[in-house]
Image (cartoon, rainbow over all chains, first blue to last red; front, side):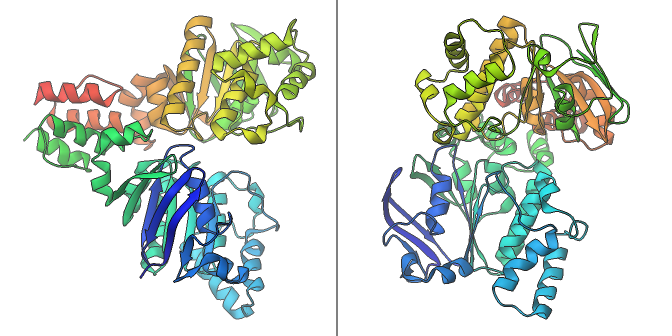
Length: 264
Length: 259
């Protein structure tokens, strides 16, 4: 059973493109610029119409009513041209729930929940347009997650963030995955795949999937990855190359244990 | 260049001329905007020991140009060539043959001249970054300030931009300032580093010395490049001094010799 599937997509740059997403999984798609990441997310979210290629729960995406798709699949586009409509973060978060017809009691409960999960309690009364980048990303993510969709599509949400902020955002996504959400995320750095413990990693290059599999299996292909223009995470890079010199046997992520393995 | 400001609790630092300098820490964008006079500066800037306090923006453009993090179409002109022409008129740049100058700027950044006829919507994020750089070269400034220049670029494009910057610094002795929160990039590409913390200068000096030796960086838990962390760890745990390399491949050779 698949939660989402793409059958033989033919749209520039994609040619005979297939993708299967099992339910409750965390799929990460990495690629350099112009690999088609954003386009893929838009296609999966139904923002770019494709005739009968995207299958969502045994039926084509086009066969659903628009309202239904928007409730079940949420899309987070990671561009920087965000603008918020309301004057406070609280109003901003309340609006989609009111639209979906929740009662005031339910709305208040959901708001407190999301506030604690995202630790947004200090910014609830502030203007979202005046927040810093990290908090803006957080508020936008909260906006997508507050009505708990079945599938969450994210287009490079961590692009503008520092390492620590990335880890926090990815931890939030992991939390929602354990609650049963299907998450498909694109990224431009492989560090994200490593920190998020994604169930499967795909490498996209010019509209083609050049590599797929478990994170460690994909990361071992260092020459192919650098050819597509992706930078290996430092510890992976180091241990893969040390392996060539027969100094270690496998990828070691913890610097301290690597040092201990090298100098016994 | 020396900057003294009272706006951010008595901030004062020196940017060495003709090198690539990095700025990191909270408030880096504000500092760049202050040097570019986009934010009020209650203090003074010295260029080669000459004090420049009150001068108009057009005069400043000949000396300092800021390349912002994201492109803002400030004249609301879509066509790139028209935009460049208007930019020259607006900032009253003294250029004889504008077309030639613009094409020259495009050549420096390695963009095809046919892009001039396009609109901004037709370009990708990375091409827009190059257009931003070309725009900055028009006035032939002594100082180029870049705010998070690598954020929308992938590895290959990043290397391309760095090559352009290094060429400018090497051949034309430009002073280049990169504000970034990515310590790996700063370690790899900058010679001098200014670390800001809570509105003041925490420390400044040669990048390598700061990341390896500065006790303030370590005690304040400021993010260090992964390669520095590793070389440091080897020394702390095993007492083996590896050479302060910038490339992983060199580190691996050093390890091979030392094991």
